[in-house]
Length: 71
Image 1 (cartoon, rainbow, N blue to C red):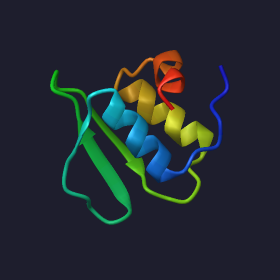
Image 2: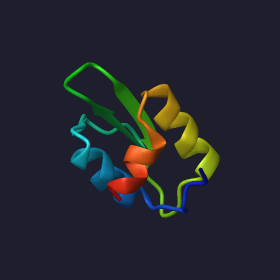
Image 3: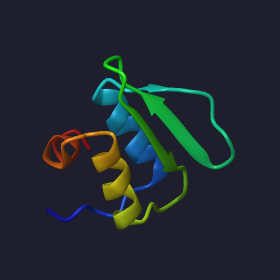
Image 4: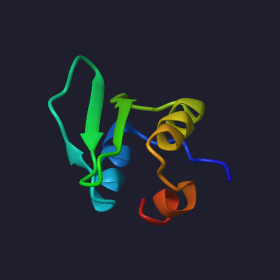
């Protein structure tokens, strides 16, 4: 399934809906943690590259279909 082109704010909001909590930022990257221990790091830019986002979601074991249904 192809991911749409999203902004950092859209990704941040969607991950919050999925239960992730924002940790302190470092530079232009956002780090978020889920209560079950999963961690995701992604760049907070106007547009996030689809390949980069897909990799971050896979690393954090976030189901892409579930992510897309919560945008």
